[in-house]
Length: 511
Image (cartoon, rainbow, N blue to C red; front, side, top):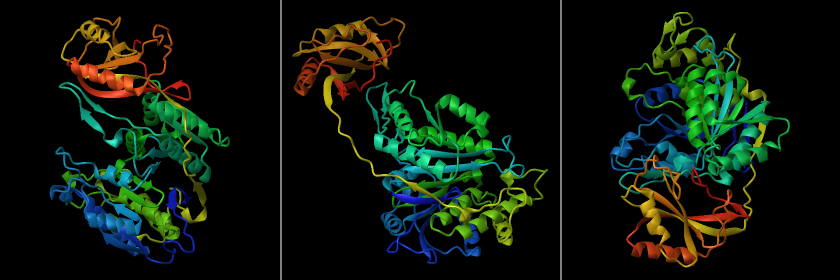
């Protein structure tokens, strides 16, 4: 995959036999969204038309009304066809009804369309948009498809539900390389990785490991790693210390909003979701139904997304014209209610008035704020295809999760220790990740969800670093049959593997 990025925005290269040329009208799948969506989309499209954007909107239906009509995905089949044809989406915020099994439409679109990179530049617009950090200029590159947002959840016992955190090597490699390529393309000096691998040593540990591997290929760019909790705190207190941040899906969602808020306003920031074949552009804020229909919403977030969209499709001069008119409007003090202040605002304007003020300033450039110049520079971002390296995989045991209503770990431990299974033995039991058998602490609170680890009979499990021995899968099947016959409610199993001789499963706390 090869893409060209222009000054923080995104321009897909076209071959001679490609989809479209820059002087042709470009098909755009346009979704008006919910809440304030129709108002800010109307304002945005009006500005694009006045600026001469060469686009051909094709309107699609998605969001709350589609959900409520009985479609749990929130998007009609014909909308998928339009998206597949256009390859570009401009989307206003949508509302996902609470409960009743409705899936997030944003997550569905990002994952179904392979939009692996969410890119959110946040630049201070001081002093016209109030911020304590006038020098802030940070880009957050967020992995967009996996992590906890896979949405795989189960209730396993009366008391316990789980959510699976899925991190893949190809997902890590793609997003981390994108971050470094982005930094190199735009002359940025540093990439910061934010993870929590002091706790999640395998999932976040893989993300961190891949980051260090790829960082070594970019000696011209400073790299650093931070634990996400302190990293988020530092971002909120000292955003000027950051340049490009790369992180996984959930952390990226959280710190993107932190960055936008400390930069001045969540309502001002646009977002690009980039995939190999399709791209989607949207504001990062929600549908704000409480102010819908009042003509007071700020369309800047969606407008900035549309500006990035124009750059992506090669219309960089038009993108610059719109952005410079927008910056000039802010400088001259025409502000919507969310950013209005007595010192720098001269008029509180409605959504439609703000759009008209921008249109009136097309062709003008800001005096104090940095002028947009997307058309003046280009940078290539190349993400190679992933090549899997096969590892030697060996089964070492199994974690059996049991729904057991007792409260004494010694009791269940004795029962399981006395179950005779061919060449397997109970190593330990944990409850909520803490070892409770053998030699647990009586103060540890236990629920009805017991992880019971079985390993080879000749495994040396008393070492500080346990030595495991291979087992056969037939032994696991025999164990499960035996547990069932003994009346144990087995709710889940996880096989324990090593890859290339390295243990690939976590130990319990206290083990």
